[in-house]
Image (cartoon, rainbow, N blue to C red; front, side, top):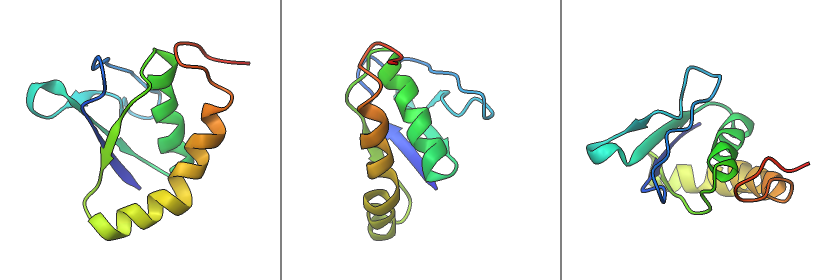
Length: 92
């Protein structure tokens, strides 16, 4: 799964152990490419939540297929993780 996060509020650079996929890219450094399994991508997105970001716009390369995958695979994982990780903190 590949997800590009666009316009994260505050645009923080969030390093992550899997090859630093949190590096900001794109024009003006306003995008971050997350690549991995749905679980890996969800956990990478939670790193932004831990540093205080609560809003992200995601996009992919296959509009219909990606949205189906996100709805089935990614969003449920994000919801589960978000219940345990408060914005700005690592949670329990």
